[in-house]
Length: 199
Image (cartoon, rainbow, N blue to C red):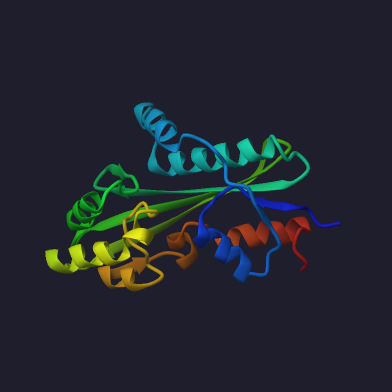
């Protein structure tokens, strides 16, 4: 009998990626204080990659403790810009400032996935994408944030590349799924090798 898979994330984008790949799963968002955990890791000098990995593991472990019989997939994405880690914007003004500061420059997205079974990690991967932003006007950025706020406020980059947000960019190097927040191809490969997905 195939393993039961639980996505320990409330992200609509991650759930949609799995659905489109015809993966059967349940959703149980992990309740962890991401801001406090991220701040603690940063204070310890952890890299952006390691922070994404640690937060993905924390989410998977939290849900796995309640569902030890299942495979639990935790995921996290960290944006690294100019040596700093940027968080989800709290206000529209935050989003505008963030996008304006990144205008014409490059940044990295680290998208981590960890699968736990019986509260123990059994698989992990961190994907990396490099993105260069185009030079858009202050008015365009402000208008974009105002119209798309309900979506961009849930994104570490204050943009959604899967729709109009793609116009903010001049170049993207890396896996499309990593940009969306989940190294999907690697997740599918592991689940297939394990026998959770048919080959």
